[in-house]
Length: 357
Image (cartoon, rainbow, N blue to C red; front, side):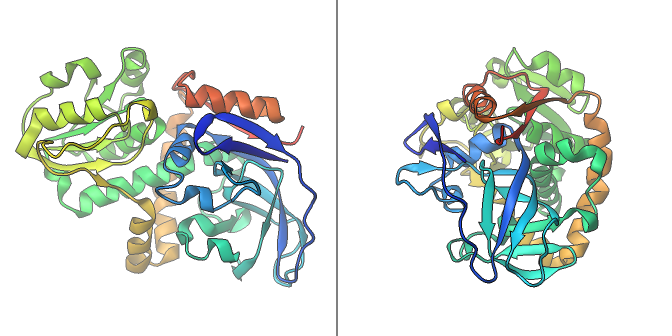
């Protein structure tokens, strides 16, 4: 079974049943155990064409797509001599009951899906990690890994980029959609660095929760952007809201050292980029490019070890506020997806889902 979304109208969704594919030599069939669903997945759908997210798990019917998710799966069947049945892996999955992969570079830590349609796509999303050799894995924290690790991974890479680029010399770091998990993870990392003043922008609805996280120096409402403190600043835009972006750029102008486009939690408020926008042109932050750089600099194992070192204290911190809702079956998946799409979810809550009834 597949959960499908119409590419031209993300509110249209349905389920499709298909026969279990017959494996070819070198292929393996993964049984999708569970996956996380959060605003991050809505970003994948919003940028589905622009960033090729629809291309990872193409649907059989034109015009429909499978929104990528992160989760755990087990090897249900295998015709690959180096990958046996029963292996449990973590990685990028479709919201489906099964996934056929063509494992290549099978090693103790995992494998890459070498399916032809994924060959030109970023390798970061094609890697599957065996849980027994994953330095970030803890069986007690599987829910957190499905829900937060992809977001934390982006936040870690952002923090690394800001540090490496000398942008942490800014007096003010402004983060939109401050109640989101990507934003709060970045603020957590910046607070540990003791960077400049970290300011979170949020709605009045999310302000109390965001202040309670304790990782922002100030939490400021979107309607109060004009009152942001002055000085050299960096803007990390996770909301993707054109009005918010324009207001931040207008507030800082040439004092804005960098404007990073990261997400689109306010996907219904995206707008064009005016030529007259003050300050630097917003630059899209593409995490796989940063992964490729650090893999060259540190090696794959070095990168994974550094992320694991930062991940474990972060997971412990989330235990004080994260509320995980578990759901099973198609109705639960559809309801959770539409609630996220329309913003009908408490910022402390996140979904772990299983499509099989």
